[in-house]
Image (cartoon, rainbow, N blue to C red; front, side, top):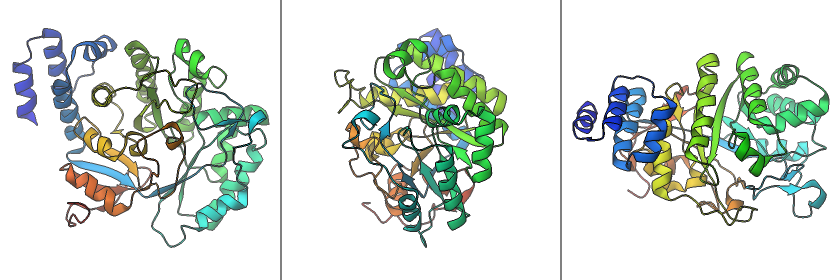
Length: 383
């Protein structure tokens, strides 16, 4: 690792890029302007060396995953985001779905006796699914399986929920926490910059509102994740602005567990004319994120979006987490034309995928406590 970065520094003729590599070696923070240089000038091989250096300094070869499942209460939504292939407007909900509390508790019960550690609950913003509804859901899940970590509701869902209930962010999150909510997912961040957000998601909570909800969650002792939707109409500067806001908040709260870049998919939405990013650009983005987001302990590749082979490739570009088994049929990305139309992977398959990339598979819980190290287990799937 050390030798690779020394060779890179010695053989990089561009002074600006060489200076950035030196800063990375010295564990010094790169600036926004240096991040822009990486986007505009750095090639993939250079970025891979730097991102891998940061990744191995933080985690060695350890690659995390968890055993989780998703519940999607509804795809009926009051908002109409241009990039979304998933939601159905409340006024035109013929092909939408709406699960009852009992149906969702039955999904949880279907995992009785299985070693899942997390339920991930996100969906559309349904006008009839209010605070009382979701508090009851969380309480029933908690009563049935107390040890199951409940990670639920994007900031977009929470903002609508709290405004409708006439609660402050702190009041709303406190009530949900007391009911059993333990952490927040990172969805709904999209791109914070108002110039882009107005075009792709102008009617939902803005960037400042998203950040405030996560800041408040951190202040209440809850961890959360953060995402960024990339590869559509945003520029490099918009990406940097987004990551900078997250990095600044993390300096203050230290409440984010992981950063998750999410690739824009163009099927079945109002932005189908926008060309998707290439796999090379995807790897460049992951690598730059790992270099720039120096105070985020983890960088995750969401494999149902990228596809399992491409997610495997990210393990050479800074990523140290590839999410979980997702033992269900989450529809958010499959409906947008993602690589994985049936996004389910067994623990054995995940372990094999990680080992094939010469990394060490480690099962974690939501907060990155280690459950099991699979380094000494034989590779048995598609060797």
